[in-house]
Amino acid sequence: MRKIVTSLSSAAVIAVAISMLLAADKSSGVKPGDEAPAFSLQDQDGKTVSLSDFKGKTVVLEWFNSECPYVKRHYKAKTMNDAADKWKDKDVVWLAINTTAGKSVSDNKAVFSDWSVNHPILADSDSSVAKAYGAKTTPHMFIIDKQGKIAYEGAIDNDPDGNKGADKINYVDKALTELSTGSSVSVPETRSYGCGVHYR
Amino acid sequence: MPTRLPRSAHFIAPFIATVAFAQLFAPAATPKDLVKVELISDVATIKAGAPFTLGVRLAIKPAWHVYWKNPGDSGAPTRVKWDLPDGFKAGDLQYPVPRRIELPGDEVNYGYEDEVMLLTTITPPADLAPGKAIDLSADVSWLVCEKVCIPGKATAKLSLPCGDAATPANQDLFEKWRKRLPVPAEMLSGVGVEAKPLDLSSGTGKTEIVSTVKLTDLAFPDAIEGLDLKVEPPQTDSHHLTRYPVEARVLQGQQVTAKDVEVLVGPYRVTIPIIGAASPATAPAKR
Image 1 (cartoon, chains in turn orange, blue):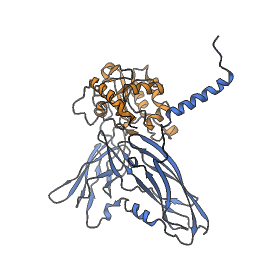
Image 2 (cartoon, rainbow over the protein chains, first blue to last red):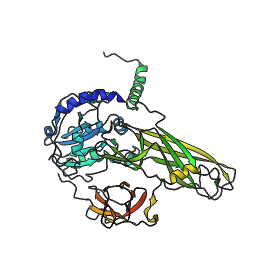
Image 3 (cartoon, rainbow over the protein chains, first blue to last red):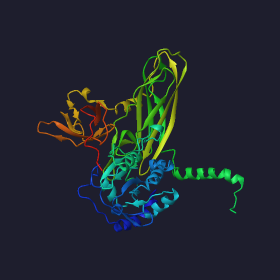
Image 4 (tube, rainbow over the protein chains, first blue to last red):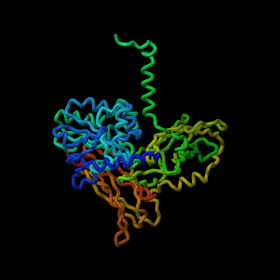
């Protein structure tokens, strides 16, 4: 378990390379209606990805940790990949963010390939973006609307145990559907479930 | 012409893919010694119609923890599903007072380290033939976390004979865990604890739990669907009254249907009535 320590030094280098623009007084996180805090992070290939790259688009943020059983379950069920794929041609950008301490760009590259992830995994190695958004769990989902405001914050669905079957509601898909038809999001805030973001 | 796979390869390829995929998502290691589960009874023989207590004991590897019914900022509750013979009734699962487990990034979990026993009152039917063996079974599920989390489940079984009397058993163990169950605050003698109703008609609400003695710094609120609730650290005023401020907010677009919310002030259970619920804090975000 301590092998992670070896990758800490590289994570520190990346953390220095990250330019972070923190919205003032947002240390406790964001709520629907708030301005989405800006960020610039490296994706799994080391390419810098900034929220400002996607002005005028809807952006989905998915807090990610490849070692969390909830994240594993959703990737096994293709929850994230299927949704990212469904919305990719509709002006929706889907970004995974890995805040997990000790995880670096190269770890994200490995899991991106091993799990056939179809959207970027960004390295938030110094936890600053997780703090700005108030990300608590993996997964924890945020939708940023075309005006750059938080339109949804919370769980991916109403099914923490993965056993709801037909009663499952995918809150993110529901909110994206509402946004795409010009309506307001009917459930903009839920309690997210999963592993703690800062584990490891 | 493309190379053709032998027919057997067509047949077997999906299986290889499935196996590879399953291994990919299988936990790296699921040590058997992380959590050990046992089903324990406070009687050695069951008497017809006489309620007894079953304990689900989880022995947890040092430094790891499992969760209370409200796991806090992350995690998942430890749950028990009973499989009992016809006519047997199980009461609510009783959780001992949890510990506050602080994680980096201001995250708080409520759970148990080392050992916990969850208790349930079982009421047998009035017509049981003495001598008959009764098979009791509990499907237990949990999430156990240290730096990583690993979900687990186990079925714990116990077989007990019926007798003319309910013979006590495992008394020390049950005594130890009964002492750790929350005590209703109104049962405290010489101490006044009062919770004013929480009015959520504006979507947010503030109230306080007032106690004539400072019970503890730690409060554990239960999780209520659609409600974000915090209990702030207590303040003691010049009249020696200790006040625990409670702040709550209905999540946007959600409705609170609960009539009250339970808060553990240390080991004491306080029930805060909820009034004027079912109204979102603010209008849903407009595009």
